[in-house]
Amino acid sequence: MNILLILISVAEAARLEDAARRTTELWVNVAQASVLGGICLGAVLWTFGAAQVGKTILMGGIFCALAVFGGPALIETIRSLF
Image 1 (tube, helix red, strand yellow):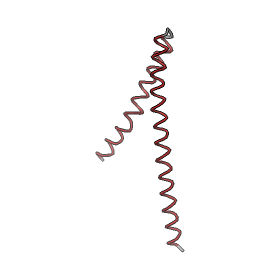
Image 2 (cartoon, rainbow, N blue to C red):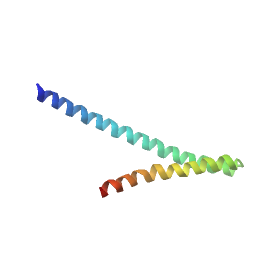
Image 3 (cartoon, helix red, strand yellow):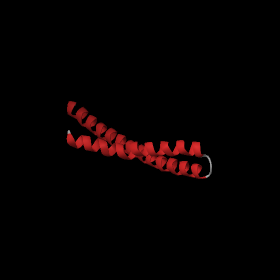
Image 4 (tube, rainbow, N blue to C red):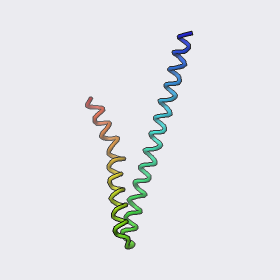
């Protein structure tokens, strides 16, 4: 009976880990698309005369790009060191 419970727990843990990985990948993809949209929207607004709002959105998009694209690379580098 205990072996059956252990096997069920291992299977559930594997499914939960897979679901967490897929959810993380989904949110990273959403964030990457949002970054590109923010940069483009900021540039368009800046070009067409809404300079203050355009600069704000553009800088927000650039900072988010650094976080979204650079964050996973930094985490992998730290993970490989330790």
